[in-house]
Length: 191
Image (cartoon, rainbow, N blue to C red; front, side):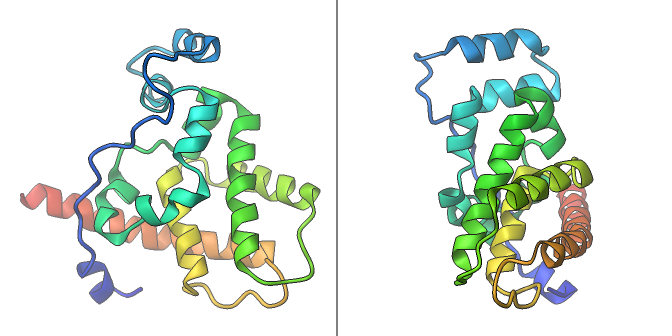
């Protein structure tokens, strides 16, 4: 996407992602997570905003990509309240982050027709690599990246999901993300 395309993106953000768990049904897991993190820390805000691990996974499941990653929500995608991968790891633990990444990657794999499927071990390794290499990427950005992969912005994936191609595309996406973030921040300053 070139700069002309960046200017055509609408920058309004969605109001707020609501937790899937009703506020009256607080689990002991959620209480333990709330006690672990100060309310004003990034991790504490994440837990209070999205609930326990299960609620977090439901809020950001692949089925919500079209809703959360619509270009009209570009503010939310790049500058919104969605937590960074590293914050999710600290707030909910590494297994939760890797599970979330594996779910997202498995959904992407389903998008590409192929007889050759990635093994669980390959998905685990990819999730670990992404968690290590991109801790500052917001989960909304990662979901938007996957939408862009599905739309063909990073070339074709022939035969099966190629993880090296995918992580190279993720690096390219970071430059795109930085441009979008700068544009949004500049627009906010001018308002």
